[in-house]
Image 1 (cartoon, rainbow, N blue to C red):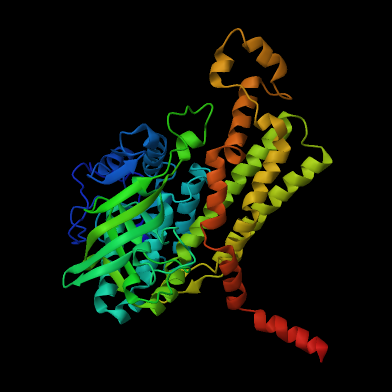
Image 2 (cartoon, rainbow, N blue to C red):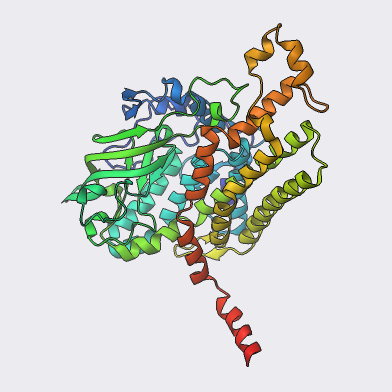
Length: 505
């Protein structure tokens, strides 16, 4: 791997203005330019995709509802090329001369893993843990798909070949992906066998591909992505009919694929009053497949429930760890805001408040230690790579404390989280003396306090923060199922039982 490392004087990739989505399934890396720059990334989204927002078909690069997160993502792509961190985020493609993202590195050594995670930390730190589907996450799912290629080949040799080619295609073109795993939330008491229209299914198999019809949810970041990777979550892979088991990838700009976006949480908001939502509203979308043709080169699995069940856990070994890195930085953001809020109103030394700050600190440190421990116990994988230890315990833990961390910040901030002046209030000369007198903080001016408490409100009080909290609870799957899997797969359970039996005897 060493020969693939970049030097800081390496030239940047050339313009990507000629890039277009691969609708025919060629998956060619010819002409690939590697890691994006922000401007070219934005231009690449002007691909004719069918994106719907508030009853209208829109252009993601032009509509104000998408502008804030788009600027943020473009900035993150540009940051890959910045001199201080370039060598930590990019490496030399072994197939071409251009730089590619460490997000797409398939790790074979512990040093490879460490390089991957340094890169992930930079993505997550720069987005303050607020972008749950930052492109680094899905890149790691594609690494998992590549690792699982041998098992897919046992079902059909073409599936294994497709997985490998798709990994190389995504890596060399630095594609941003979303995924959609679940069925539409219509009637969970019934099954797709009773109501075929409730779920995405294969309606036609052809020598050159498949035709799928139905819908999938919930595709986070989808409007900003180049492609969607479709597979099944643990709640849905046990299908009674084989036509519902399908893994494949499609460009967002595919004929018959429609994206319906939820209401924006950041449209037309200024950075002063809405520092988070104006930058990090990553969007969520429903995907409607209206008899969409998927070329066979883009199909990775069909009709095999057992492989789908086993594969879900295999392909997510790296992405779930990257997700915990993101959660760690989200916790750090909460701790930073809560600590500053407590200091700004002079309550940081109050016993009850100090206890809550300590509790929040314990969560930060527990996740950090968990990350260190999982990475210190790398495991060989089915595809010959190495992956960190299981994230199941931290996955359950994150869901358990998702609402608790918001409760802590609400209690510390109190009513001040609700009542703060706006930027225009602060700029009004008639109001300004009153604001400086009555709305300042302890050793901080009114401007800083207003921005800080508005930041706190976005985390715990408005629709952006509430969406983030809801997402934090559900994005790793059903918490009950996670607990069950953790117990059933715990490596030392038998030893725990044996010690108790020894005591009883």
